[in-house]
Image (cartoon, rainbow, N blue to C red; front, top):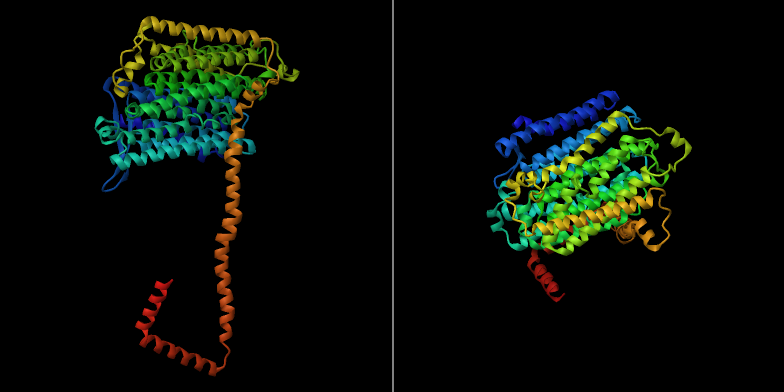
Length: 639
């Protein structure tokens, strides 16, 4: 088992080294086979590990000591248990499909850049696997930083475009802000407990050593890290800009990997978060606020990828709402279903963009239903799933979060229902504008419209099937199921508590949720099946179209003042003070040397005079050292 777990992580790393070091050697066909094959191999090994866990329970494998001192040790241990095994399947499974899709989507790239792209993609999967498998917070943090680096590289893949470079830097910097919180939490745990291993930190004994202030501070700092990585208010604006990268990258970042890291981390440390009610409320409030904010923005976006990007931010908000109200299994459930239908939607969008020759404005699309039949039907399944319409997967996971929110506070549920209605509306606005009605593009685009190649449509079909049936792992007992996922996570989350809601209340909540979603999607199809949105005319429309002007707010309130302060440090402090002191010292030495050299006149009489004066001075000091010292002390006391 040690070898299997090791190779789950090593296959993507080998792929990174193979493609990265040989980017100027290998053909595109070789790169495609190798890069995809390594991730598929990791997926197969993940299946074997999952089966083993079902039979034998959690396994921790020790490889070496990452840090080993007399008083502190950080082992490099990998852990496969009920939680990490699920994430392994999602990361490697969806990752394999995205790699396969990329082989066709990126075929126009030159061979060295093609290899560079897949090297980054392999490294991304390696980092995410390390994050998930690490058995302590430091190994998790290494993977955490790795996916941040890879997101920078992939978002800025087309580095000749300065706009894309800016988006990559934005993602990198905003993630670093969150990572600082995570790092401080790790230091706090080390200071208080002397360890960061899950088996030692996440126990009742360790909790007893921490005060309520410690627990609240540590969990809030961990949540700051999650806010950056999982794009929550206020650290969410990098994620829509991440659309600068190739579309498969968007699918990988937004679906099964990077953005779910925060949910994984909080679920892993659930015993800590459950001990702080205040942190739970903060997470729930930030989550539902993010869900609503992003949903309002998505309603008015016209870039097909931007709509999906803000949709991701909104769905992540729902996951954090679930975490905040204690529905950890519901949040993980939504991570899994979201991985399928969001990867499907992004890859479907990539198929549309491919057919439209890189056009992303949905106002220039329409009528693609007949031209792209496979893309159309799979995209429709993704829209139905994310809208929460039964029996597709999104219904079960979103409903579980909403019910838990209702049990915690009806206000959370009402806000969640509003967000769900907006989700159904903007997703079917996107669907109707893109696929229904008449084609609104150019004649040249219409002439070249065609379905994507098999390497792109096969992942769409498989993800569509998963989006339709994945809800089966969490069918509630109310509907005759046994909620396999909840039972699967018992070793991590403990026995689930009995719901405080009656069956009648649960049926009522489900009915309201589904009814509102159906009404919203019908309205959207009715409005947009024949026309697209024009430029917003109302103040509210422009406000939403411009994304609440949050980017402008950050630019004016944070970026520009920091740039001015940096300019002040550069021009005044560095040049005048620091450089001035350094250069002034040199000039003082040069000036002193020029004056002192005048003493060297070459006249022996002057030399003898200076020698005599020096001897006299030394004698005076020798015989009067105590008097001189007493005089200096008196001067000091007077001053």
